[in-house]
Image 1 (tube, helix red, strand yellow):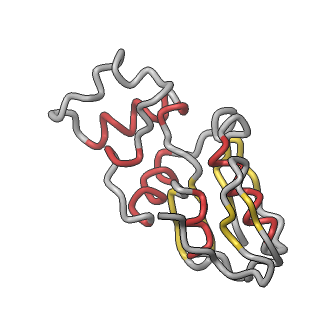
Image 2 (cartoon, rainbow, N blue to C red):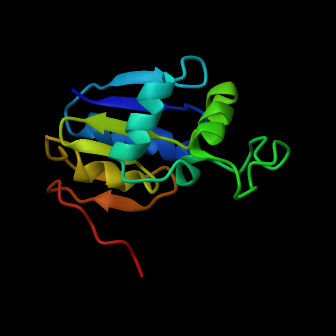
Length: 142
């Protein structure tokens, strides 16, 4: 079973969701701005993704600076409190599968944790081809 913590206004999140569906799976979609994860769930996702709490905070388009979250003296607990009080601070999309948890930035990181192969070509919203017609990952253009 796959769960995506999704923001439909985010292109990266939309691309990630579409790649999950391109594998033939319909994930559980949690729009985390309306239904944020619990503190325990958020901390576990961050840890399982191999990130620090600070690495999981979104700065762009959030109250990050206004809240003074750039202060390196803040503890993980203080940062988690801010993320729970302002879910827009949770970077996205987090995807949880039986094969692992990833913060899918870029969106194609989801391919590393999906159980099923891609069912055919996948092109991101910006036109970048990520998966070819045979369902194989395409190396990014240099």
